[in-house]
Image (cartoon, rainbow, N blue to C red; front, top):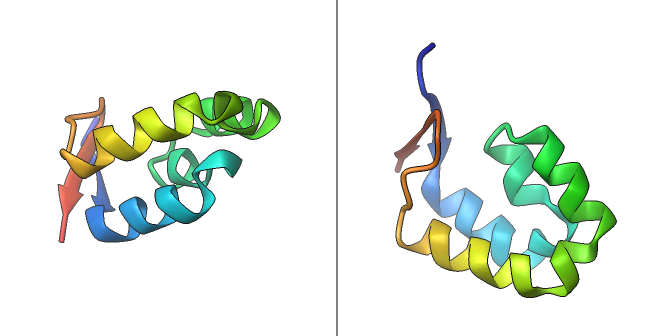
Length: 68
């Protein structure tokens, strides 16, 4: 299966603004994790901070290709 092309800047901005709602995970196509993050309010903020850092350093998530 081909990697999903995801805009890195958009995902980073959405993660910073709405990461606690799981929007960044929905953008990346990780629907289950997005719902879990939404229900836990970003893992009480900790998961949100971790995702912001991982997206900022362009972590190679499974099936994701970062594009500009």
